[in-house]
Length: 160
Image (cartoon, rainbow, N blue to C red; front, side, top):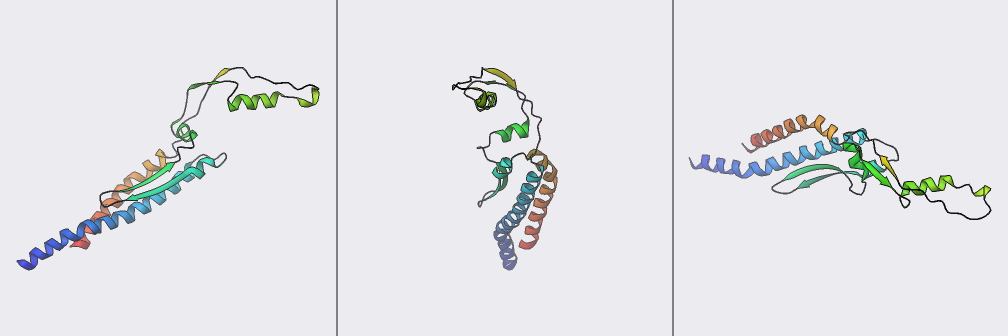
């Protein structure tokens, strides 16, 4: 009876660490795969969005989390992910207006310097949601749950 008690006690002692180790291994692998899927699904125009996409695995004794994110410094990321259909005001100090000013200048035809002022106007953004983050996550979620269950079952078998 004492031997049996010790064996059960050892199983309860070893299981949390074994489960943690197995889950960490699976979550790290799944996070790497998810990052690759996100990068493949991202729209590419300049490559700036792709350069801000990062994955991180947070590991503590109580929690393991794998995260794939786009930097908050790239504000257009949310508009590309969720879509945008809003009206914005463009005034003479905005980058869009300055670009319009520079295109309207014809320096060869003028002898005196001049300043062009672009008037304020409204513009409607019309971006369709591209789901480059949520799409890959939905694709991998069922498999991720299955892999984590399997990791816990392996840890339970290892502790026995």
